[in-house]
Image 1 (spheres, rainbow, N blue to C red):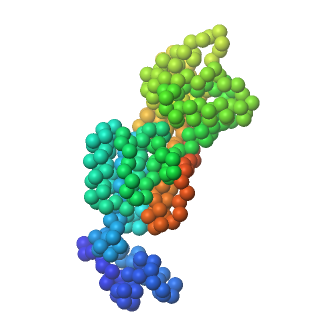
Image 2 (cartoon, helix red, strand yellow; image 1 turned 45 degrees about the vertical axis):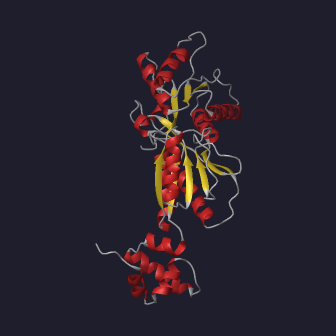
Image 3 (cartoon, helix red, strand yellow; image 1 turned 180 degrees about the vertical axis):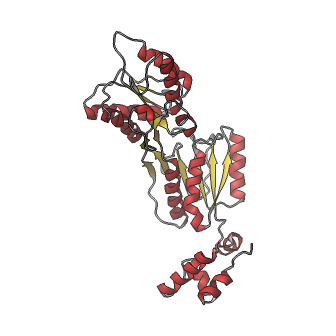
Length: 339
């Protein structure tokens, strides 16, 4: 394949190379029709700017550094895909480094990003209340925090966990469920308390009492498995008719145990999870209704904000909360969205 150059675009649009360059870089003064003709020519020919040449002219690397402690990638990979989707049309690529909780490795990754002269830095994590194991040096590089602790005065993006939990609980109530329990992860995770608050808020909105207190524990199938016995072994009180779980692993463990003890899902009890981790949600029997945190769109929105920061646009500090949605499958008793 032969690389399409700026000269090819200029020739096709019948303009000078200088005019073509100015049009594609959105600089210079020219008729709108001329600029649009050049842009259309570039798109038709499949022209991609030479990042090295652009970097020499603009003193930019056209690279964003993505630093994460999420080595498994469960949260960071969708975020990275969203960042790339926002930036690809601007010729900006994403440079990913994972450091887990190792301060030395994190510092080495930061040094590598500084050597590449990244135009911006994104810090991404596994939980909204924990950041990197080291304090970031003040470099003046535009920085955004995603699904990680955001220092005061910085820009952060997190899923709206309260809204997601509220939506899941309202969905269950909308299906006629009135005895809705909540089983979730460790108390020391900020997201756990936020989701529990969303559960309570939805119940209050519907005029329903919570089915006992939120049951905190582990982010594991084992915790869901144990809590099934706790919730459905108290015959004197009766059983809940729905359980909202703090993540998909808990929900899958609960459904496994309910199946063993003869409690039918969703006929006897509806179950909803959180995360929409498809490897768990679709393999659960029945397939799991769950809350999708919208990480791809979260990453895209953060990417657009980062591009604005790099361009020098004023960006107010603070945390942006992006919407979560309920993905309906069979475990709640509603008709699956795939049907």
